Length: 226
Length: 237
Length: 45
Image 1 (cartoon, rainbow over the protein chains, first blue to last red):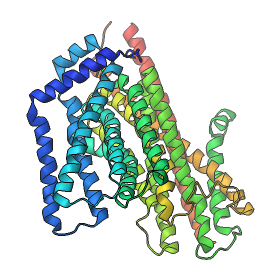
Image 2: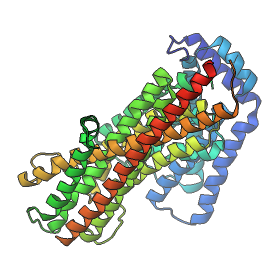
Image 3: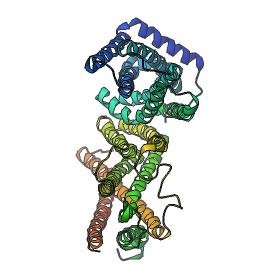
Image 4: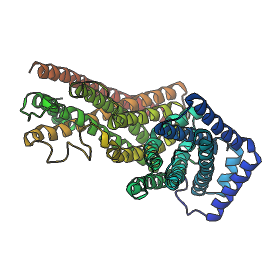
């Protein structure tokens, strides 16, 4: 079978990430679209709730909007790359460079999205968060986690028809454990919990991220040249 | 099925059938301890838990074949993985139905909003997604690769999900808040183990049997269409 | 008692069906193998 897992080259990974960032910067409409999506989703939520939003609803809304933003953004990671450009990659890179670069890039994008999302949320719907530090840590972990799980799913979905539907169908059950843990931790953070009682939950989230990355790293070489 | 050869090939299927007959009889008629609320409905453990374990077992078999496909590239292994997933789905749905029947008598409703029940639904959705993924790729080589990769990824994450469920399920009314209730030796009355362990074996055998039937049917179908192709386009070489 | 009997009968019905399937599949597998070997020989000639 293809290649196996060659040693990855950090310079390649770095170059790839830089290339993604430049591309993104050039076509600002892509990222602009997602920002607009975030703003309008939050605004819809704001309009439909009038007045005080219960904590649980705030939390659930936040993570759902983040989840869909993540699916939208990460799906593009592979769908955008086609034909000729892939041929070029094959000749230069090995698959592990590619998946590592894509995951890191997606994670960066998601972190940006998470930060923006938090700001927009607070701007529109008020700030009910009591331990902000914990909440931010949770967002950092959560965005990295969403990127880790969804990048491989995006690679799978991009090989099939009905990309977006498939991305949602394949991705939803697999991100659910992560999402439930995130919602748990973030609702505790909203209630003003300290870090220590949640250490175990945060460890579990970190473990999920680790497992998802390891699996993407090992499995991606098999769907690389299709 | 009278000569020795077939007996050697089929004895485990007959054993499986006998085991299931035994657990139906034993499950319904043997003595069980009477606990409040649960009462006689504890007998469902032989069916519900057995089917759930049968599902996990055959899904694991599917992952092994998916891995073998990725490493070896033989299409038959992918066909095996698909058959295993389908068997697993059947067992999952059966497990859910027996669970709902039990819930009707114990909790008063077929369905309650409980983390563990929702977890079971997530499992079923995961594997329905696998079937959907296969349906949305036309090229057979590509389909097999994508499906195998998804199967491995999904199984591991689903397993993680099952492991962390007890944490979220502290408010769960489903038995076994920490770990699995049926396996902890202290929880199951000794006379019930007489039925419970054979029940496990019985459901495992049935799962394997169904899986092999599905696989052979699919292999036959592929073989026939391949044969028809060679008939229609004769190769003179 | 009655329920157990009924379930046993239903299950035995399913099992019989499975054995029947098994037999059909066996037959079909043999048949396909024969056809293929005939075909292969024709190709060789």
